[in-house]
Image (cartoon, rainbow, N blue to C red; front, side, top):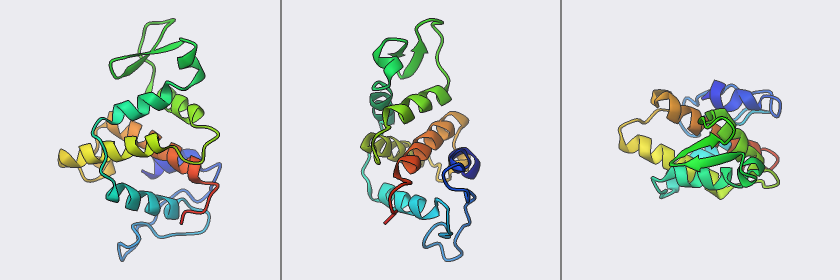
Length: 159
């Protein structure tokens, strides 16, 4: 998770590497200039949530608010976004960019939280309890969801 979720945010907080707490509470040792405190709060919130398993719906609602989706450059077919010019699916990073840009101006985006919580609940229902054990596609999208949430929340105190 360090490399996929936090390292891309190193321009905001330089201490992006997580240190597991020996006591397990909090999950990550809360160090100066790190995302550990925000991530611990987010983990607690997700653990208390009762999310929908339709995480695509929440991600797609946010991405649909991006300018290029509104003006028709990108379009949704099923659960995939396509480029109108090429007719090809766009990359997950591009969908992440759409969600990040569409969520600008907000310090929290409930849909992103519900998407992340839904992805985690779905993984756990399939016996996957560790981020590193997710298949690549789900890991990439969960990392994008979490990264965007943490970025949006980074200007505010975690607690």
